[in-house]
Length: 285
Length: 156
Ligand SMILES: Cc1cc2nc3c(=O)[nH]c(=O)nc-3n(C[C@H](O)[C@H](O)[C@H](O)COP(=O)(O)OP(=O)(O)OC[C@H]3O[C@@H](n4cnc5c(N)ncnc54)[C@H](O)[C@@H]3O)c2cc1C
Ligand code: FES
Ligand code: FES
Image 1: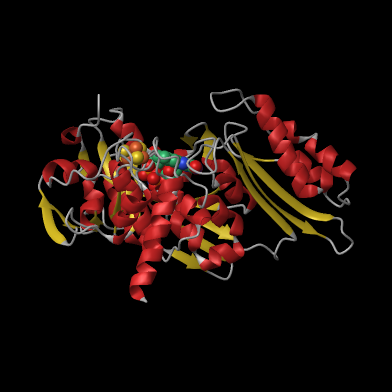
Image 2: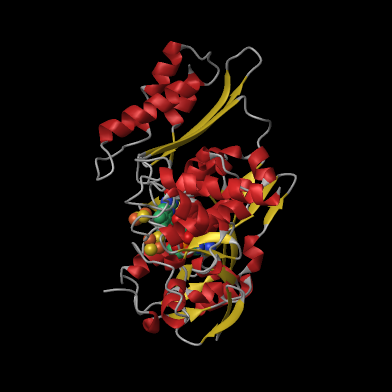
């Protein structure tokens, strides 16, 4: 069975207000942003007969606003724009780097940050960067607006904590206190492009003047049902010098926070080992 | 009613708004240069430019292209007068079975339009979303490089 366009009813809001009002009236509607997740399912005939809430025309959700306290990224900002946006490249380079690895050019030109988050795949490539930057998700419904820390948005594999009628309107990245001393983004998949991550990680490191760790923030995706900060490793290194031994100790703690599985793309053992290798190389090389 | 500019001509579409762009192009407008390989965004055979950006026409409901400008492989040249990129593919053997070729041509067009050049590493990245089961890619890279060089020579 293929997608049957005649079976679909399409709602086409032009403003955010219209979008949340239409969604309130049709709570079973399926939001579509860039469609790079939705259309794959639709083409396979899995979404026939649905009402679709086409968000693509909501111009105000395309905006990227650079403020003193952070950058507010409209939910409809595409990976291609985030990959190239000068202020994001400067202040939040891990996000630009991550967006540049989502699918390939065609997917980056359509896929949105809001769609990536709402889809809540364990392998969403922007999530480690968003977790490290402690992103705040702005949500809107006909009843009003609220914000959630990224860590509270994901409820499980492909599940979010959005209530019925809620849409993601923006993602806020608070400015870091200063430029990190080190950062890394690594995605490991079957090939360099158009690939689903076996493991994907992002980290920033702030060092004290004496070389001890002031703060480490590190997050990995594809190694648990949702993106995870490696809190045990982060805490273990606080205030300590980075040495071969302390880095190894941190690498030994990753299973406190992640629990990779065997699946068609990789094995638990491979994912653990590569995740450890990425962390070790970042901390001590 | 949905209005598109396709290869410079204004077209209207009165069918179901969730019809895929590729189906409107091929079946309503008879522009069969655009191919469907996978229907999943993986292969890039269906690549067209929408407002100048390379996208998979199999992943776009036509209502999302309302008011947009769409360019397909048919815009690049005619059998009598091929475009520079097409000449490059002919000269360097960039096409074998040809199924991937329209998509390759459109990805390369999008890349060159964005100011991309002929450096092979970034070209490989620009066409990473296009699969080819025949050429092994090197001839495709050579084709684009050759057309860029040809164009520079023509300008001199
Ligand atoms: C070939 C291919 C390769 C891919 N490669 C990658 C990859 O490497 N890494 C990766 O992370 N992803 C990848 N993806 C998945 C996808 O491209 C991304 O998740 C993308 O960011 C989705 O955004 P979208 O706007 O296209 O979402 P859509 O398909 O429009 O929507 C996705 C989901 O989110 C919901 N939704 C969308 N916007 C909102 C909103 N504002 N509020 C509430 N709900 C919303 C929809 O209802 C749907 O459930 C790939 C997809 C394809 C087809
Ligand atoms: S047919 Fe669209 S990407 Fe394969
Ligand atoms: S020439 Fe046959 S798939 Fe590329």
